[in-house]
Image 1 (tube, rainbow, N blue to C red):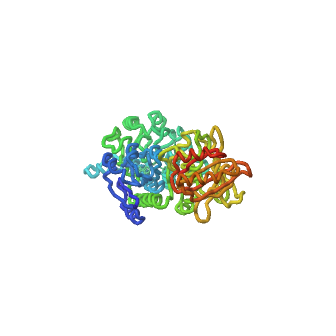
Image 2: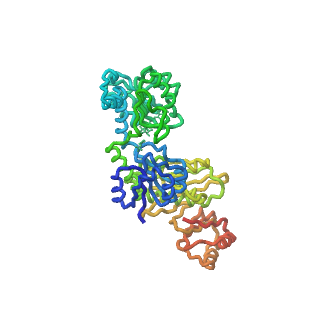
Image 3: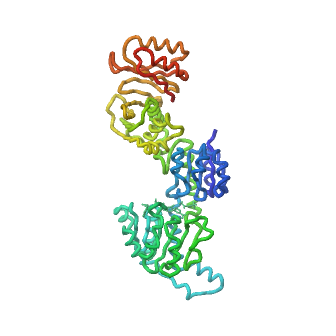
Length: 528
Ligand SMILES: NC(=O)C1=CN([C@@H]2O[C@H](COP(=O)(O)OP(=O)(O)OC[C@H]3O[C@@H](n4cnc5c(N)ncnc54)[C@H](O)[C@@H]3O)[C@@H](O)[C@H]2O)C=CC1
Ligand SMILES: O=C(O)C(=O)COP(=O)(O)O
């Protein structure tokens, strides 16, 4: 059955054709973004969800999204998606980090000119027939200082444009390196320095605990009289009540806001303040940007649903479209080795060590480790996948260690997974053969060669004559057909392992009977 995708926001219709071309059933229902209950009623039918900022993907929506595998945000901010809830449920959340950046930077620049020359108010007055030439005295931009709070994708484009306008640009961004600042031609400063020196302040950060109210009443006190403030990033970065007061006293000469604490902003304390210019979250709303983000999100969602490629995900390592086919058999190997080790582990796991040797060491080991953790955790948890497994492991205080090295052993490439519990260390290693199928090549340091099957039996015993005959007849009497039979041992008379693929589930009574055979130490039924 073809995967189904819901578009629940005003996306450019260019996205629809992409989904169709990629063999995906797509429903374009932008009205659902504004109707929580209607969205809740249908979300269970979809594998993918494409949104902008109107759709609120809450924990409740995620709980109802029983089939959902991927949420794609046609834009940058994902504050309308409960990412921890999505991650816990194994749903990938991706965005399109660059597609609307230029357009949004241009909106901030447009706001700056609107404020400097009071264009919206002058327009309204002129069209009202007033011709108030002396009322609208402006300020020149050239030579003024622009203070950027946040100098990431959008902030740096704003900086570039402002430098072109002959402004001096300051940037406060704890993650901006001195080298990058130099390349951009901006002066990296602390927040207080920026507040004290800027003629225009523009915000370009996400809304986080650290950035909420970064322009507070206190911060406003530190600004120059006559400063202009522009927010085209997120509502909540500026204390709206404090800003209103500063506009009313004239300390702040004007403010240009595209985003508000509460959206849609039908009422707001800033409305009607002197030289206040507002737009209804239009930063990304140009034909070019909307086409960019819609095409990009449709490609990314389709890539993931059709080929397993992961691009621009916020809660999972990337897997490019080129590497996805090559990685797939190794993802299966990692998952099956993890599952093998996980099914043999009965006590709390303290540590998981994953060693990659040979060509596999140069692959996307973050993705492979996520797959291995999925395998380990699947026997204990109902739903876990490559998105949620690393987070669950962290929550359970399981230490994960990755080791990568060049080829040392007989195999061109292999991975070994070791589980450390309070009681013991147990390792299992495997490789992928030229047929693309994963194989187990070592268990607890004992070499063997076995493929994975849906039902398997794992026996450890003493390597003494007499075991195999009795074991074979016991399975025969229980009506269990053996598909493959693999043996390995530490040495003559030492520890031995038997790993069998059988044609069906092994009943508990048969397992008990196997365990009571002489020389047997442990018998386990495994499922893959
Ligand atoms: N109005 C609109 O329609 C649009 C708004 N946006 C918003 O613009 C904002 C910026 O987007 P991008 O530049 O693409 O993001 P980005 O992630 O490229 O840049 C954000 C920058 O903020 C910096 N930052 C983080 N915490 C900070 C702090 N405490 N103090 C100072 N800087 C801090 C980061 O180091 C980073 O450089 C986002 O909130 C995004 O949602 C984006 C597109 C359209
Ligand atoms: O991309 C972003 O972060 C935006 O804020 C754009 O929002 P929108 O897609 O216009 O609802």
